[in-house]
Image 1 (cartoon, one colour):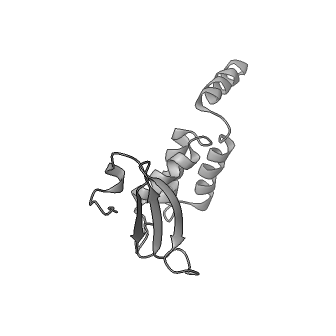
Image 2 (spheres, one colour):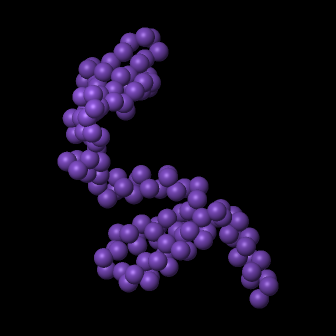
Image 3 (spheres, one colour):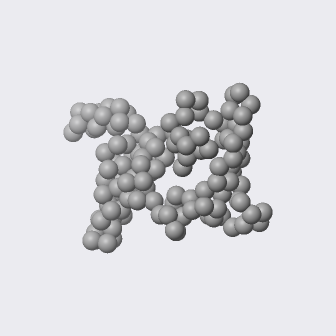
Length: 130
């Protein structure tokens, strides 16, 4: 998406403050065309419109987009190696046995509250007890 000056928004020298995101037509269903206002520190205001938002049925996210969105959302609750296992399981869900898929999910959920450091300490402690 570009702004009136022709520069992509992510390449602006000054990041704008996005004030609001609203349907183009009052009462319109989301997802649909959207308009939003950008306010800059110098007082300038620009309005942008998106006819077909990313992630909508007409402009779906790619698999890489979904993975990129998933990782930061679970970063604090599912360790990196478990994230990879979940991503692989979902990518191959049609070929996986249901029980195997559920084991991957259960393992990720079991370890969700543990940071990698806590899991290493727990594994070391368990090894000492054996």
